Image 1 (tube, rainbow, N blue to C red):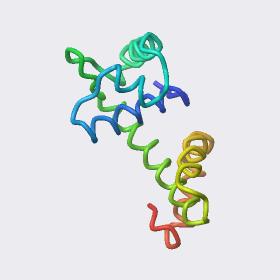
Image 2 (tube, rainbow, N blue to C red):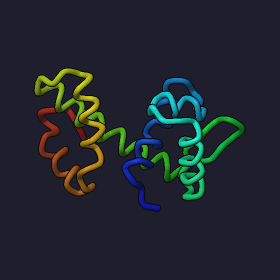
Image 3 (spheres, rainbow, N blue to C red):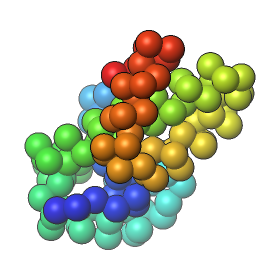
Length: 124
């Protein structure tokens, strides 16, 4: 299943929440992404139908493909955030802008950029 910007945001949020708390509930995702609980429930249903997440009681778990997509998105986010902060952008702005930037390049273009800048940024 291909992922969209929205699904990548959800998967990344689930990964980060699970790393911080050890578990992830719908309400945690709603708070992190600023979305309503019904919107999160619908999105999770779509992600589950696509084989990206599964539920265990109230705990949201990433399936293998969802974990891969979430890790890739988070890696891109951290790369762009670090690049922006290193360029002098304040951390809050860098994080918000990295969130937009993480979705706009193909994997090939991102990899080439990361490889090119790796010595300067410590990426890749």
